[in-house]
Image 1 (cartoon, rainbow, N blue to C red):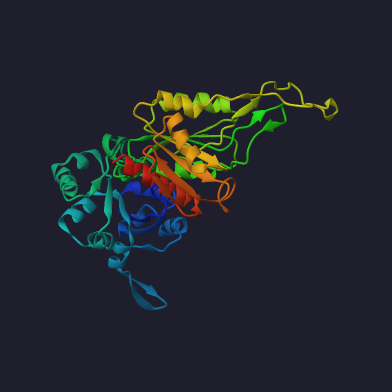
Image 2: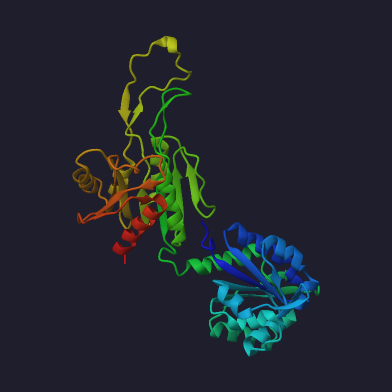
Length: 401
């Protein structure tokens, strides 16, 4: 889930040639779960139509202080519009718009809305080379930064005048990327690398059969999404499941415990926080048939051997990492979980119980108990796995303050 998901974003468009790129900005914001409203200057209509922007945003587009509705004048409330937004992006911001922002020259609805908003404002300048380098524009950009506005960088390349240099508006993907990174920079896990394992492993018996378990991967995926929301660079190693992860998450798919072992250890040393939520098989068939075993074979038994214990080996390698394991128990639950903390050199463990109705494999809810290495036990009520993930990270963050 993107940090833009659920955000109310106001897009201000001023009258520069780069306005033709704004429909792509709207689409990218919407694709990341944001709600978008648009205010534009009258001059911006020369480069992009309100109909296009309204269609993409699913909202009316505002450009004047009043408009006629059934022969009655209607006021476009710039104050209400400014207060609605969580984030205000002005792109493109022309030389005229930059000057109006700095000097409170309220000559259009966009500037009136800007002067009425209290949210974070991002500015994407767009002008020709000589205009951008002019001391007056550089002074205006400097002043906007001084008063706390987020002025994005400009692109370099061919400009509308035919010149080559700095001044062009960033590409829509670059604008979204810079805003996303800036929003993440204040989050508690920004710059941290989080490794999460999720789902089951399938240990093959023959080409069509396997030993597995009922894990759906939902808990591990919820943890990965929450880590991403907290600003982390997330690596998710998932066993076979049908779940989707946000594009920002670095996902690796595996099938067997052996594959999980190697991939997890490969990423372990560079990680800051590691949560082993996968239900990794403890045993695997020692012999795997090359062909499907026929019913007529009357197989009497399958000889099993232990899989390698990835959590135990991560515990041996642990240096700076904060290592969290999961324990699914059916008896002596707390005692077994605490013993696992000690034997595997964990910083904490999340205890699941199959004895709790509505918790465990495959369901969307879970009831867990968080136990740290000092044996401080924190139980949580039954709730959705999304909320459980928030509880777990709240505990982790409190121990890493």
